[in-house]
Image 1 (cartoon, helix red, strand yellow):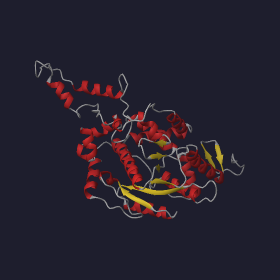
Image 2: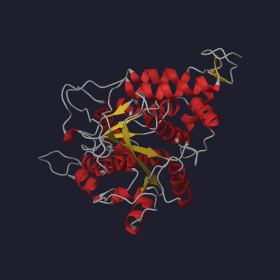
Image 3: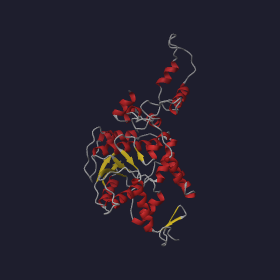
Image 4: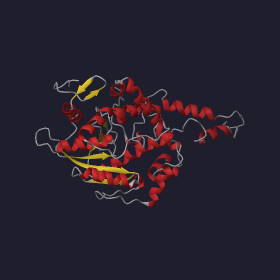
Amino acid sequence: MICKKCGALGTITLRKKDIYCDVCFSINIVHKFRGCIGKNKILSKDENVLICLSGGKGSTVLLDLIHNGIVLDNHKKLRIRPLFLHISNGDVDRINNIIKQCKLYSFDVYIANIADYFEPNLKILNTNSLPIVNAEHNEKINNMFKDIPLSVYNDMMLKIKRSLFIKYAKLLDCELIFTAETTTSLAINLLSNISIGRGSQIENDIGFMDNRNEKIKIIRPMKDISQEELDNYMRIKQLTCINFDHHQENSIQSVISNFVGDLQENFPATVSTVCKTADKIGLHNDNKIKKDMKCIICESNLNRKNLKLSALEATEFSRLVSLLKPQPTPINSNDGLHTEDWAVVNSMHKSMFPFIHKTLCFSCSRNYAQMSQSQLTQTIQELILT
């Protein structure tokens, strides 16, 4: 086997046909990372950037690429001021391992807790230390994820973490956030999004940039790097991940993950084809979307204007029809309303079709239907019920 770049002995075969030596492969990964950032021209010199770490493979490689970029002493130097954040679910061992991982590169890391989602007044955290968890908020977050479908759990966890990333980015004076999604994970997310009713949100959930928030942009600088390339890079650099990124078993996301993995094994172009398709999908908006036209949980465009019959309206119609009962006894002979009509209007949980709230997108309405009102923040509850 001969390296396709330099002609040396090849050690890595990608997509069953592309052969590289370790040196050329590493250079290629760095080029993909730097190229993804450079071609989009989103970085200003010495800009604060919040780097979100999970401890998984993507996070581990992102940490190494950031370090390698900022220690360079030439024109290719990555001129940013990285600030690192980990959102913990309370696993002390994982927290300590992430702190150790960052210290290997002489980086400090902020550790937040997922229960901070319920904290109305967040404060800047101490670096390299366990977070102080509010007992009441911790109980709320546990209740939120108790007895809900695993597919809803996976989706809500992503939305909560995104919300916390943005809140801490504002606190730390960062206008950009880096996350560690790869081509493989984004392909899985694309198909999962379509399955759970987030097809209209693909542009922001899967693309290079999530710009739903007016002030904070979420960037995916590793979107051109595959899981196969991650594994080889970690082997060459002798990196060790702290935990493996995975979805809850027996969920839509885990089934799709297995499906994509099996397809990729036999058809190496699967992931790249899916992601290239996603890059071509977007919504046309004539003007900036007003705040009251965005979902209050995920900040997606509700996009209910100028449509003859939207998918949301079709779902709402199906929900109403499924709840109708054939009893033509009017409540009042003057208004002609039936008892069953009122039952339909007031019933939000008896149909297989979710009630679509005017302040929520379809998927967030679906998730909300699986939880009691007390399981969301007070601000969101008030906005939903207004």
